[in-house]
Image (cartoon, rainbow, N blue to C red; front, side, top):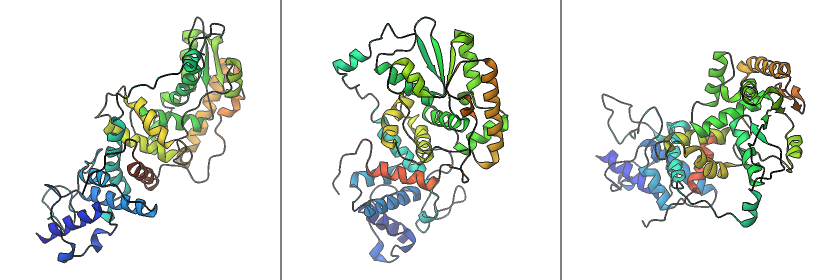
Length: 382
């Protein structure tokens, strides 16, 4: 079949770094080639490799053959359509999706392939030995008996690194009758942090769906419900031992450290990529290991990338404002001590154009991780 030979010729050229679109590929014998494997790669894989070649070419580089082979042999992760056939190389069947032009595929379709490949790289680090700690680091982690008993609570995305940083300096949470410090922020940021925490733990919905689902239920998701967290801590430790923290520098001074450790600075596009990679990763590693693996590998590479945190779209801003006022009222009425200004809970002015993950931006981050993998594949010969 001439279409098949032409498709194999295009696949071979892509493997060698070509960027020519499928519809511009020669239809005569000059564009034909021999099969590289038992079955022709799908349209998504071929389109992803062409885009990767474009990124490499723009940087004055070439895609390693090992990486090209991985892309061509990759599966398609996530729910939705499976592997799509190449138009002009396969006949339309009675069932399933018709063959497609790779150039017409959405960025979301290419991300389904890229996410699976990145998940493989992350999973390769499962079981990596912990680095040896220096004598100074071990000494720092010894509990200081003169430090008052405390706990750090709040949105998991922010509270966990704060606790880890304190432990590294010998300020271990816990002890008898601890003071529970609840880390808080303006509610828009709290909501974005809650979505980030879910992206690392479960994958879960898109940012827009996360906000829409919460607003449709008329209340905040549990991960972002600060009054609920405060009530739970008050029930366990006593209302007088719950302190709401809106100025972390004051808490750092109280605990005897320079500053509280924060989470990686991941923007909306970076968090969305983590969310996408988490789904196929869940099939490769134990669920309990997934969040830590994503933090130690993918989050470390994406730190400082992906734009600003997502913001609530205009349609749901009145809901956000009402929830911020409710949060402020409930915490104030409970009489919890506050470090900082409780009015900071109220959502400030939101950007005129909402910040939301954009598939094209997410794909750019994914292409960078394929070109420079977390765990580089070994080079193969042609």
